Length: 282
Image (cartoon, rainbow, N blue to C red; front, top):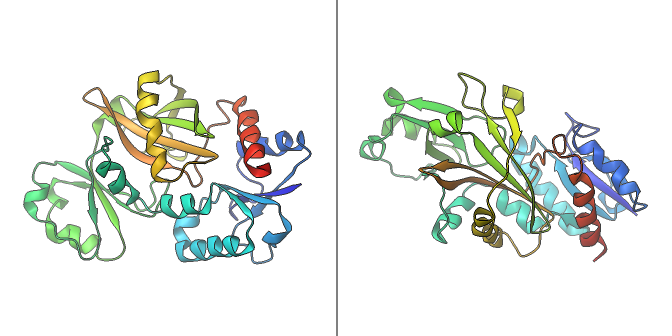
């Protein structure tokens, strides 16, 4: 069996963390091959399955990415996560549905060119974060301070595309952002990420500090049903959030191409591959 591990041109051999998947898959007599998602010379029909892993530039060429998903669908090839999940998770307005079904989500104003927002909506905030609905890794994310928080300025910045406007959360700097990883609908492991002094971004490329984290069983039981909005079966999912007033609030659900922190939990590579093989051979 031969499977493609979809990646991007910036990481043609995949991230150092995800390279660990290749020898693990070989134990199942599966040849796992890094494949750049937008390389026109790739023949996707030549693979038995595609696992989307390091497509870390998809948001910069989103229409092309959606076209690629359509191409995969037309081949009938097995894709993990499922294409329905990938499409829904690629646009952060899925958070609306999570709020509607009763999960705690950090306060969010959803914006597009038709949105109406008044200065009164912004008065209670001293600092806010503006980000595109299709983005990753703090792409085009901007901090707006009190002088920038007026309806005219917000409308000018969100006249094109879909956007999220959220309060700046000092808890991310003081307490940290929690990421919990699930494989095959079962909890696997978690980390807590804190930004470097003077920054708000927790990603490694911006100096973020990562440490293992142990969530309570009560929290895991509370959060696990959130995946239902994407589908009943998935290979990998990550819940990112922060504690506000002692209660966990969801920031994002990552089911497209999240870092799964194999660098910190190398033993979890085997679990990932075991779950993947079960789903591919089903």
